[in-house]
Length: 603
Image (cartoon, rainbow, N blue to C red; front, top):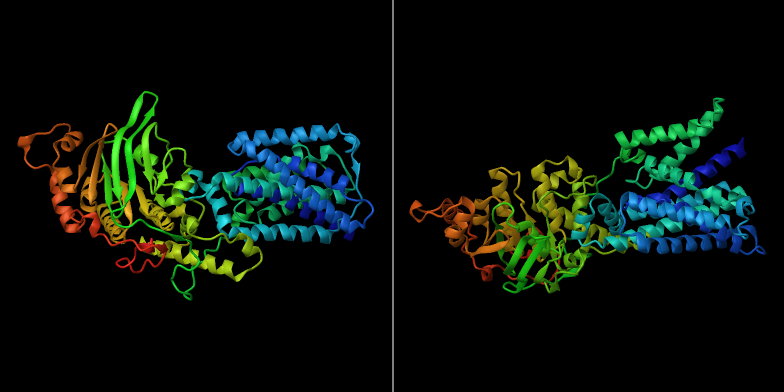
């Protein structure tokens, strides 16, 4: 009886370790089936190369080191050419790799071919669970780290993650290498337990079972693979206990459970365990300790310089010949009719879209071939026309991802429980909490982003953008869907950020709000700048009136746009304030959000 339980427990541990190799990439939004190939390479390499003249346990440890190295190396070889693939294309490419490895090993003499390779049984149930504990510990400590949050952000929305300064390619490759190493560990442990391994032990069915185990367990919490493996392994044991010997029951139940999870529980069994949102404690100061410093341009320095910037899609000119300069401390509103090219222009400024011609420099970085995450690292942060939040993460976790560029890496130090890691994580939490407070969302810090109202989601995007302590903040229709009261509060928030020294470029169809808020307004029509200047001047410009109303009638009297500009800008105190009047930016890391009148570091 004990031997039977030991076998079951060992296979639960081995199944969980294999599932963790899938979890490692699922957490980054990758669907890979190449882990069976990594495991087979590691199993045969470790068993064949481990010295036979040493004791069993040292031989196993040597085999584990060899196997994990081979698995990681295989992941690098496969990952470099396939990292640009997504979804089913990545799954097909990695599955092809695994099948190719199986066929090659099947035709090698040193592997024993179809007969397999004999390996001494060394692994015990205690060793298997110790290995599982180490793997689970790795992913547990990764979850709350800067690196772990970056992987979750990539899974939720890759484009938004790039705009937060996350190097998506590097993080995906790192996750792939982790998957290869963990699969290599599984392959060696499996070999040293079953005594005889054959290439067909790591076939397509094995890969699918590993994936199903990870998906059923869940990819949103580190306990998922263990829960999935326990279920998958115990089902046949229950089947035997009740005297049912039909071999089709286990795959049938596994398939049924997978369908149920996909339809009703996308986060897997682990999603039933609530995520705990950690708010920063009241102890500790609100200084910038633990956050990376950023030098901001002084008031009046050029932040954005565009010269003849154009973008064409086939024969359609979305933006043509735009010359524009934005200086530090300005609040520049970008308005124009629908289809005028506003979003295309800010997408080029933030690096999401390369220009067809012309030149653009943003915070000293040349736009064009520069990756989005490097432009974000230069000090550009943005929101999107259609909300791009990380829906399964809480509001606080969303803003923590926004602080990626100013927070410090903590994962490796968290593995060793170094006090500096906890100190830096607390600093990032305080930064995120301050940004939530700045936009009035402190009470909703623990709520999932997808559960927030539309207006709160727009404000959360702004908080996330502020968390990186940007020098240039780009807002794409931030007041969309807001009522006039919410829009007025947003206008005041934007003006307060400008008083802190932040440079803001924003698109908005609420022209009255733009005229009330901005120090300068730029008008686009058919991709060209038709007006640029102070709000009241732009509102009275005949070309602007014609673009919005269809005709300019000099005898019609003063335009409604001019009225909005005069009443709004004067009341707000923003339209008549020159850029030089804005407080100088204090160099250094992010500071407090509680003193906006004396420091812009709060953002």
